Length: 371
Image 1 (cartoon, rainbow, N blue to C red):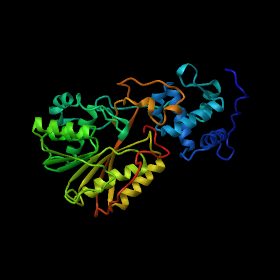
Image 2: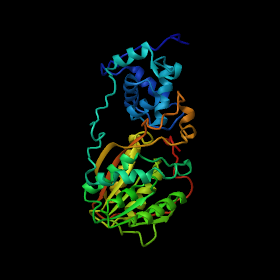
Image 3: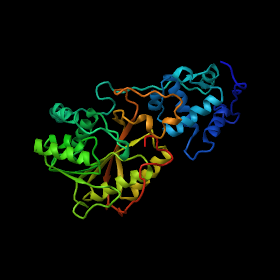
Image 4: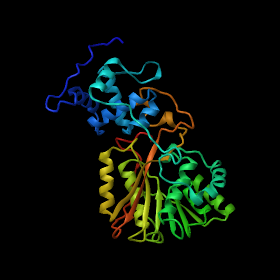
């Protein structure tokens, strides 16, 4: 490897005896001219992922660093002579491997249960409708970028329904689904477990598709075209036991979805389900979201990380982060790299929510990568 300048000297912080000063220098390089949060731990996570894989999509998945932060860290590592990406691979240089070793960093391990994919659930009675649901889902409209769509695998949707059922949030309950390119409403209704299912969806293609399926399968689903930037109608507020949504990942957009869902709940004991990623949400954003939940009178009752596996959408080479990626390779259809946590909240008091009308873009913020 030929360096434009000498590789950095590996120095140790004399105060701690452990973390190299150059780790702080890499963070400073990565933070230059950006407001995206980047920490020393993000650099460590990135290096650990790079020890485990040289593939960009696998590194994104393993590192759990927001993509817009990760690309800055990768660039800083290359600028420091610790990383190269010749030939389409992300390769730690000899200096880079010496650096990671000096920090005591090892390869990232992924130790998922081979039976449940790390979700901690089985399908149980939901397995009885799995075949029919997959047949229906095969004809769904394709995801489009206009509404930041990107649907999960059919297996993920089935596990979502099973999880809700196992927590007493499905059988005999009234369920509202806010945005449904994942077809949670259809899978839930096919089980005949919920008393009623209402869907709010902005995309007319999905509105028509879900309505047609509900009529053909005689499912208790009511579908309404609705832009979630607008408050709920009075007949929907406080009328549901459970809500499900997979929000857009901007902080503003996430709150829009969560606000509408919480406003739809009856009160204490009612539950909501949401998805939240590491790909587009730093822990600073996670903290703001947790504060929002607490202020609304709810608590995070359960969180299952990497519960949701997403099918690769057709506009990957047009998403916001694409020009910033060091390697431009479109992943295969079955190559899972984008995942999110399943978050279950429960109303403790209230709920205390004041619905507002939102205008403009709710999809983008400084950490958004897929819009």
